[in-house]
Image (cartoon, rainbow, N blue to C red; front, side):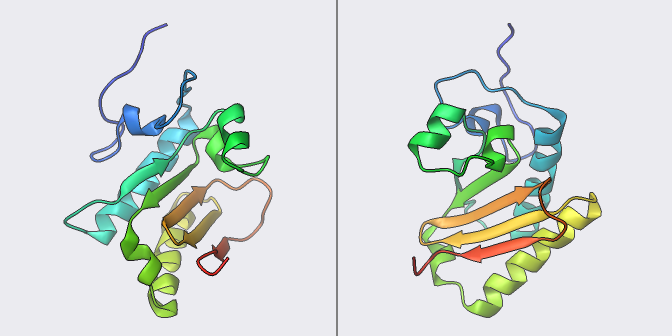
Length: 142
């Protein structure tokens, strides 16, 4: 099997696709489509200092170890967690603005998205199979 290297998009690499993983990651067409959506979001954010990629694709074992849900979009490479302390200080209005933009990007591709915020960063999920609407959550106070 050939090991891929390089970029999937301008800012997203094969290495950060499988960050923290020891198993071989499979990159599917849905994962590539998700990468393009995340890149659009990163371009829209236009931050001089890009947030770190804390998680993207996860193996079942790793997802279980970190407390991920059984049907996590990380298992198919269709969720990305971006880490930055800047996210934890978001006002409700800024949280709404970021969620709205993510959902617009998902709508352009005809998929449903999930947007969540944690003390450590944000979660961007796309291609939700189990929902007919976008899903958002705020776990900063949890």
